[in-house]
Length: 149
Length: 192
Image 1 (cartoon, chains in turn green, orange):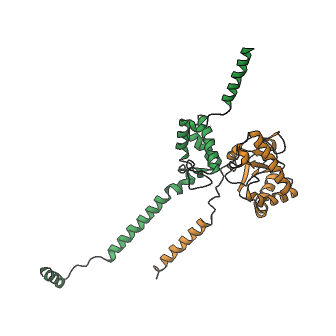
Image 2 (cartoon, helix red, strand yellow; image 1 turned 90 degrees about the horizontal axis):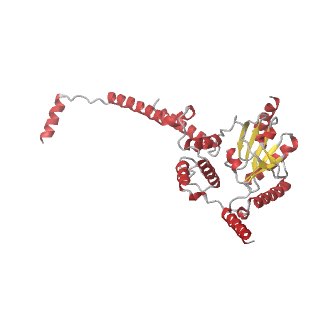
């Protein structure tokens, strides 16, 4: 009878122990990876915030999803690929370089190049217009006169 | 004379770019799911503990509509869906998305109680506003929402006979959208 009692008590203890899962935030490895990954991800609701800094509800849910994926031993790339497959390239702050994003990645450099070409053309043209004239003898004499004084 | 027009041309270019840029909705994000198979899931419905999964709809063109009783824009689109369901045979499946919000007093309860509260609340809401749904599935934790790339409620998907997502709309469905986009799409899918 005594042993049975202990048995039941120990069972109760086990139950009490199993009631609540350890909060995920206490796993520092998962959290540091979460922060690392989610800094590269955009919050869909408040678009100027990263997923790691956003307090929106969807961001909470997505962080939970990323945590689950980290715990399932997915690589950073696999996690990002999953989110891109659901939400599109838009979730990435640094979208992949592919034909669709070429304008995004190279557009500014192309514009810079065009601007440089225009600037060079303009400068060349301007040099032709305001070419310094040689001084005449009278002017040279006058300059020397002025410098002496 | 020609040079005078250069600033004017530049200005017009600027105005055109601004007009395009400022008239676009930054919240409208193109979905990568178009043309992809609808993600599988299995959830209990509003009506019973029997689970629903998209595989059961294979062979049919159907609409998948994300909604919640707390969602204000849903109220706006709901009469449109009710009218659509009265006139058309197309099944509409509802995804009751995160009915119990974190700030909700019921949020601290157990999952079973949350499900019960969510079901009661949703049923009352549907009774009051009409029920266009063949069935509604209960996505309490929003995980299925993430699978479908939901980022704002309401959202609406059109899924074809092969279970492929053919259309997605974020925001309230309007009669205009139904008439100009969704119905023609459904008709063309129905023929193929």
